[in-house]
Image 1 (cartoon, rainbow, N blue to C red):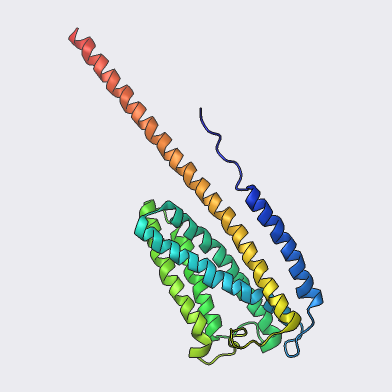
Image 2: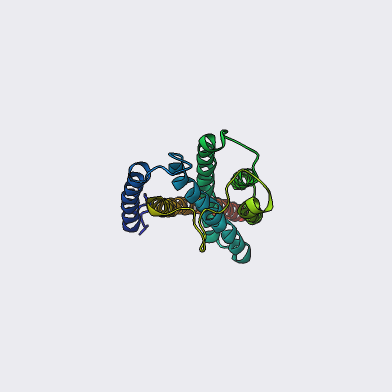
Length: 257
């Protein structure tokens, strides 16, 4: 009896996670847009900060970090699981990196007076964005799958190294971008601003987790369909070869008679 293939990436766990994330998003928007007051120097622009920084963390450290780690594990074990996880994380990382760049530009206009400056952090973040767009392009190359996965793994690892440059760019070079806003020993935020920021971080991480689970499941189903299609094609070729061999044998036997 043939098992019915799954038709959805949803499960009880993802439905609970999705509902929780929607609730969290609603509470976050309430605090970020209405309850949290304007900041003394940044005024209303501080509301963009609640999305900008968590999106940067989700993209650069979590998304691209998982991609690099998955690449290392794939090169060690040649595991489809790690390969697909790395690819899924890269896609979501690129999405949040784009949100980071756009929200940074929107924040920069009222704060710096311009949407874009060749600031070290802005530039290095853009380089990460381009590198992982290249990673996704490599994943689409029409070459042997194992070779494609190896090339992507190497590029993912190299791309993640640029995160170090992004992290320390404000310390290594002079630029417009502010330094670390939050640290274990010092913070420039307090009260509702700090609470809204952490609520934004929690919301972005929940969204990231929900997207990653679903994207990985889609990638896994695509892989299964491709593998089944290949097996079916090989079975057809074997059947054709068997028929040809049988016909040849029958013809030889008939000639000998």
